[in-house]
Image (cartoon, rainbow, N blue to C red; front, side, top):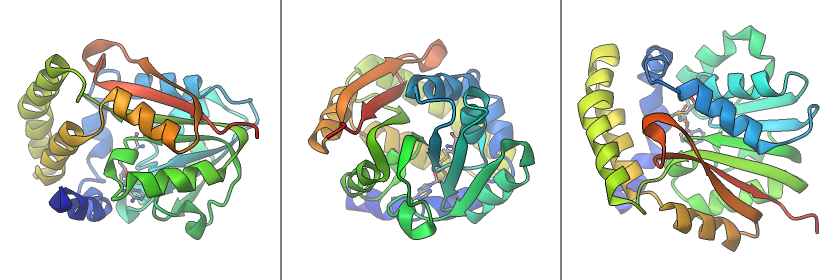
Length: 236
Ligand SMILES: C[S@@+](CC[C@H](N)C(=O)[O-])C[C@H]1O[C@@H](n2cnc3c(N)ncnc32)[C@H](O)[C@@H]1O
């Protein structure tokens, strides 16, 4: 496990190496953008909310937020210069782009407080999920809402088998074809296998003081594999 934690510190650098082909590969993944829009809708914040898209990458998750909340004020943060550079070219997304670490968004200028936070494929990648959750709780307004759009398969041997079949048969070869490298995709497979199960992640959120913690499913092959983990900072 310490080896995986060390690997997590290098994840943004690894994303620099695939920034140019990220949109191509995710575009071939059926449901990728639709599922992000489902999570954005499930966040359920007011139309003119202040939002943080944490680990925004090339802005695919930012686009989902912008589709659902055209009048929101969106700040989007990522630690990969390469991914952020791609995002910045998408002017129609109208976001404030910040280069920074999700372990301490305020240090990069994402001080909040926010009505809502979307973290899509992010919490699994940070080196210390508990320290990150503590920071995110503090960045939300009382009554603010958070959605972790994330893979989680540990509770189901069947879903775990599907996940390993899809990564070995499609995603890792797809990474080789599009980017000519597989390291980050092999890390993806392993980090999902070792991430919390649904019940474990819900319990972790509750331990950090979040309330109304619940999980909603996706459709397609991602059913039971990708989830919207939803929670709130209580009013008092
Ligand atoms: C799989 S991509 C997801 C991008 C986007 N949210 C989406 O849904 O397409 C994960 C992103 O998390 C970023 N990331 C990983 N660790 C990070 C950290 N500690 N701080 C900020 N960003 C991080 C990576 O640079 C990468 O852009």
